[in-house]
Structure formats: C-alpha cells, structure tokens
Image (tube, rainbow, N blue to C red):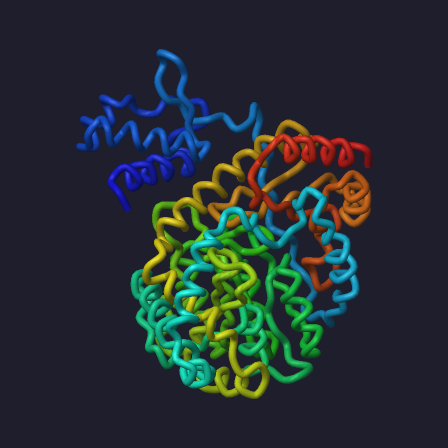
Length: 469
C-alpha cells in the first residue's frame, strides 16, 4: 500500500469513528503535512482518494470537509427481542418464490445477493485461465482433484498468515464455493433432528440448509452493529443440546454486524467450554472499509473447534465457484465427505485464481473494490435519508454491500416486494432471513452496483411505496 493510501485510510477511520463529524473541516494540506510528517503531495493524493471514495468534498477557498451524506441520518435498528428456544425450519418455498421474482435482469438489483460484475477483473482472470490451461499437464487435472490445487492452497494459507492465522496446508479443503464448504461442515458434525444455533436474522441459505438436513434452529439475536448476543448464546448452550453453531462474526449477512475482537475471543472461550464446534461463514472477509481487516474467530482457535469457510465469489470471481474451509480437527472428515459427493471443484478455475493471486494484483483490486462499495454505501444511505420515512431505521456496516432497513410496523415487506417489482425494483424481504418468518417490516437492500440516476429514482419510488402503507 502506498503512503498516500495509508494516510487516506487513517483519515477514513477518523471519519467512520465520528472523530471527524459530517460537515467538519479536515486538516488543511499544510497542517496535515506538518502534523503527520508527510509531503503536501501525499496529502493532496490522499484527499483526492477520499473524495473519490465519497468521504470528503472540497469547498472553493475553504478547504476539505467531511461529506454530509444527508441532512439527517436515519437511526440504527436495535437488537431483536429474545426468540423461541427451538424451531423446525420450513422456509424454502418462500425463499424460492422470492428468488424467482428477482431474476429479471431489467429490474434495479437492490434484491441481488452479489455486487456488480463490473467491479471484478474478469478479463484479467480470463487471461490467467487461458495461461494456466495451456501450461497445465494433463495428469495434473486428475492429480489435484482430491485435496485441491496446491498453488491455490498455498496462496490461501499465505493470506491467512498475513492476517495472523497460521494454518497447515493439510487443514485446507478447496470446495465448490462457500456453500459446499458450509454444507460439508454441518453434515460432519450433525445428524437429522440435532439443534444448530444460528443468527436471527440469518442468511436465507443457512435456513435452507438446515431444512434440507432436517435440523432444528436455535435462533440467537444479532445486534445490528456488535453481532451475536453472547448472553443469549451462553444461556442456550447451557440449557440445550446444541451440536453446532453457524455464525458470521464479521460483516454478517443481512445486517452487516461485526463482533469486536474481545467478543470474538469470548465467543471462542464459550464454544471451547461447551465443546461445541463453530462453522464460521466469512465470505465477506475482504470487503472491510476500515484500515485493518477484522480477524476471524479462527484466529483464537487452539483446539480445532472452528471450521472457517471462505470464498472468492464475493471479492474476485463470481461464477468460478471456488471456496474453501480451514476445517480444524474436522478437516479430514470434511475432505472425505467431499470426495463422496462432488469430488472436486474445477481444477482449471482453481489454477486460474491461484495464478491471479500470485501475479494479478489482488490487493490492488481489493482496495478499488472496497473504495467503490464504501462510496456506494454512502449514496444509498443519503438517498434513504432523503426519501424514506423518518421513522425508518438502517444499519451502517463497516464493509460488505448490504443495508438492513427496519420500516414502520405497518409495512409488510412481502407486499412491498410485489409493489416494488411492479415498478422494476427488487429487494430482499425480511421474512426470508428468519426460521420463524419474523422481520416482516424489514428488508435487505444491495448497494453493490454503481450508483446512478436510475438507482436514485428507484430509492425515491421505494420511499413513496413505503409511505403508502
């Protein structure tokens, strides 16, 4: 990372933490240069970058000021109330019906689960694919089908090492996307009828997996900013025979919540005490906005209780379907189960991503991607404050590409979806994120597509529909 990028990240952290408030003047170029010991040129480059990220703006003859995304800020949601102890899961029909309605490519994709493909280096990846396929010996295609491509596993292990997690290559299993990794982990540690602790709200695919495997959900409330309610989790672990937990400790979908490091350590101690494994879904790990990446609960794992699942689908290569799991004490069982089901992800796709990670400038791409997402988040938050009712609540996550909206109680988000689709706008309604179909007045909106006049118009229309309830 260049000096001006590092300096820009330091200022961005001050803005996000509230030290530099909206409308407040940032240090002048001369003052910043003198105070932080950097050249005026470095300060100018940093401020240009912060402008591009939508965090500050220049005022003629006045200097640079923290951007006021809106005249007013919508409040954040509060933690959900405590939930029922166990729940049979039956949501797939609802989820499939909603997902089917989101497929029209002409709708504004606020309901999408992916960011815009325009944000990914797909042409550069295609060159890596062509190069590796030309150079790949025929025997390698078969030889690497069991454990995963060795170069890819090494590159993933190196990224863990940089984040402070030391992994043996033997612990890594390459999978067909993160969903296969998560499915395999759950199957290794549960039997039909077992209880699994999940988040509330939870990513809808979590609910579908539990339903398919005939597992019962134990919903744990999630604070919109701080993540899992550890008090409720401790109570449930003490009173119920929970066989596994499936949580997203950072940039949780759909809320965007991230646990602090202290709470991640407490979570691990709790799991270790009860000897309950954690399936840690960390597919948004690279999409943080802060200067330092959030460490996973896996970084505290001393006894192999954490199965840490990741993917390149959200950060680099949607459609390549390459994920992995660092399986801890369960790695061999996960690998064997994978061989009994899908055998292997595409070896050429694995080789292409390995080549790109080594030669393609992955970290440079990630910085551009994070900056684009942060700018687009600001645009959606500002637009929501302009057009949605003042009683609306919304999350302000420190990464990812989702916002969770809590509308007035009278709003039914399933009806809202149908009315919005009639206007060419999609969204993800709250009930698909709950085993008990709660969160009826909530919706998840995706800001992962470049913001334009069409996006702004869609938010205005959504605001009108919400106000009509």
